[in-house]
Each structure stands twice: as structure tokens, then as C-alpha cells.
Image 1 (cartoon, helix red, strand yellow):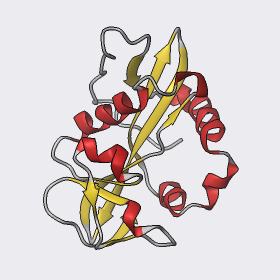
Image 2: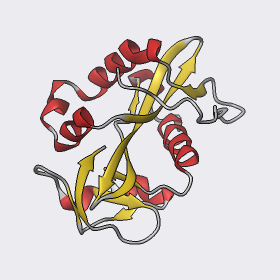
Image 3: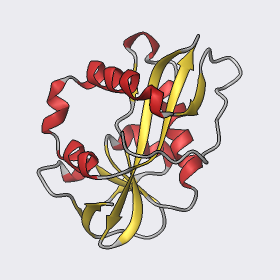
Length: 166
């Protein structure tokens, strides 16, 4: 497993939530991989976003734990866009039994809190990610096929250029 940054804050879940958002540690890798595979299946390996993650280093990872087991995860990956440092968010995986309870949003918020002023890129649905101030990034190019309308950015300016794993 690639190195994780461990200086990110642990983010408590909302008071009524049965989970806690924590920093991913190396011992979580197998559980996170199992959760992602269950959520996305083997088809995820054909996606351009996955090709990028295979080459990038993990900048930070977060897991949601409930009663000691991992029920959600998300990672931030180090990238550059036209040579400028940025982060790539994803995948967000939540166990089937824990969906629709706001856990995905809590995981996204942990990434935003960690990133601070560093821009974040992702491939996702604007109706979902727009509430976190993500917007289309029409001038960002990924190495491979991608629905350009799903390439979203949150940060200063309007990035343009090629995304490269860092």
C-alpha cells in the first residue's frame, strides 16, 4: 500500500450518526479494498479514474467505522493539473446497509476539511457534488475516455490541462 498522510484530523460524525470518520491506517487496506469491490465491482478497473489512481500516491484516506467495522471509505490522491498540485477524490464506497444515511457526504466533507485550500478534482455527478461547491471543469483532460460533463473541480480558479498522477 502506498503511504498515507496521517496529519489529517479525525472528524466526528454527526451526533446522531452511529459511525465515526477516522483516518485510514495501513491495516485498513484489505477492508477498504473489499468495500470498494463490493460497491463498484470489477468493472471499476476499466475506468479512466482507476487508471489514474493506480499511478498516483495516496495523499489521505478516511474510513467510517461502526462498531469497529469499516462501513465506508474515501481517498484523496496526489495529482497535478498542467503541473499545478491538486488532489483527486475517490472512490467513495459505502456498504449497502449504510447507504442513504448521509455517510457518503460525511466522507466527502472529511476530504474537503483535509484539503484546505488545495483544489480537488473528481469524476462524479454534479447534482450530488454541487452541494459541496464542485463545478464542471471543461478544460481539464484525463488520459483516457471520460464523460467530460462529469469532471468536476472544487478550488480556486478554473483549471485547465492534463491531469498527471503525482
